[in-house]
Image (tube, rainbow, N blue to C red; front, side):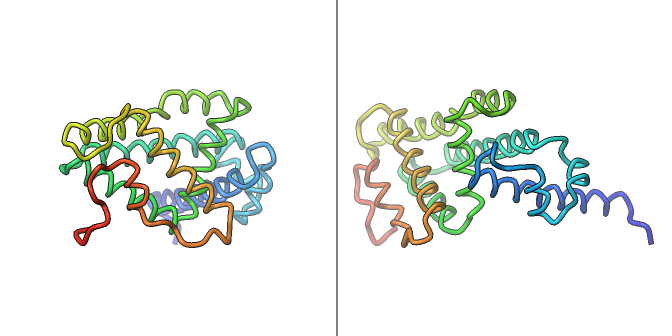
Length: 208
């Protein structure tokens, strides 16, 4: 029986996700220029010619991955900012979830590496540069808003909220890159150790 359009669309979506996952792994470990479209196709188990039916070039895969990664990070950051909870609870929740994701999701760590590489390089597609310029500050702004709210409620230490947000994200990104590049990295630190950098009150309590 011939496949219907819905089945074809599902198969195409699955294959595209396989391409994206393999490309992310290779870009994160080898870099954009050391990765060949043939390597991505081989990693997926797909003929190179067939891959071009999904993406016309390696650069287009890279741009798609950057766009998707930034959108997901921004969505998660805005979710935390808009939670119906105190700033203290938002910070604890965000750190707990982020460190848990670093520990359990190789794809998330690879994504952090990809964004770091792309942000620190001008030798990437112009479309990717533009996406980074447009979207990279949203997570910092969201967490800065939370930090400022925490200062007003008395739970967050004094200081420029944006600088606290920079410290927050550089700590998370640094852990993600460290654990993704070391097989002997050891156990992930307790999220509350990071929280102590920002919170004035006790974070190691029975209620946690």
